[in-house]
Length: 284
Ligand code: F3S
Image (cartoon, rainbow, N blue to C red; front, top):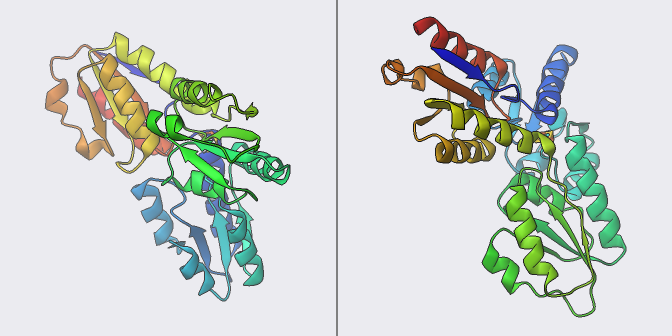
């Protein structure tokens, strides 16, 4: 059996940086309680491991406001500006592990809104990254995810528009939605802020999936980028499995298979990928 592991499988630069930051803080801070604002990544295994080391997850602003001391780590998704203000007000120590690519979008949105532009974020309104980006604008923000929303969009009279994207958004869909909005001939500044890490991972996964009999996608069930990766692989390879850990993999399903491809979402730790890869290789 031939096993092909995607080079781009697993943590992207921003997620690795954020996870490493938490482990560094665990080593450094013995006298202070460590919190992450939201789970550091969408991966139950990692969050469980950190919990064992005393790191607690704060789920919302209200919980943050109840803290009186400690270190709060901001994850790679970033947060709205006012969350930084709350941290300062409460005298909490902030360790900002926002991915620099997301930080760049915050700066764009802050500046362009200060210039009076109406901000459009192409992305998923419910995603914390999008909520964070929105929170850096000083003017009104419209979040667009679907064709209908793009068609419906009307900028306030006379307003110039600045379009940015959620880093993990699909590039073709972004282009398509921007085309729809551009036809309305507003004065538009389009900034493609999609991160290459996602695109590269998707492109590599698709090309492997096209060439193998079975494809395995590893990632947490709540990870949206893993879900997208699974969809892409499934349309290229019918026999695609979505697993969280090795335990979810039924080796019997791979019995008569000669080529297997493996990829993993941005929040899947290396040890889980290794474990799956080694077991698939050993068993055949
Ligand atoms: Fe950053 Fe791109 Fe990852 S924006 S968090 S490196 S997907």
